[in-house]
Image 1 (cartoon, rainbow, N blue to C red):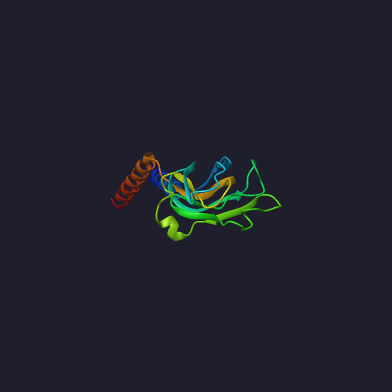
Image 2 (image 1 turned 90 degrees about the horizontal axis):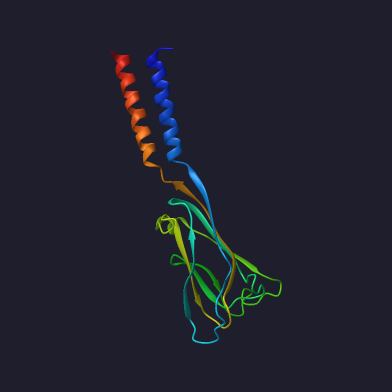
Length: 180
């Protein structure tokens, strides 16, 4: 095998590995502990503010689903009425007298899958998402099993671009040498 052929194959391998590494989707999962608000009985709506922050890998979010339960380990059978937001997007709502408000069977699961329009806003690309709650009826807001699952395009390390550049230079040099 000639040196030219060896270097060409090495440069091509470096290029392929670099490009495939840069475009890799990485699964992300972030969780929050159960949340219970104070037992308020008047003055609604009450902005409870940020009740937790999800932290996960940065990069362009390809897909994301937030899930949780009404009711938690403190009290599984109910939650006060509430609007739940993730970075300003309404992701769950419990209305007074609905099954989430009082469910004799235990916690009631909910989930929100972010649309392409939601993800296009880029709100999840920074690796952090704030969960906020507005309480809309009496007693205590209870959220459990809070999880954010998704996939991000990994942000490539600067070294990947260096390898890509070296691979391209190697290919150019090999092609010039073959023409000569």
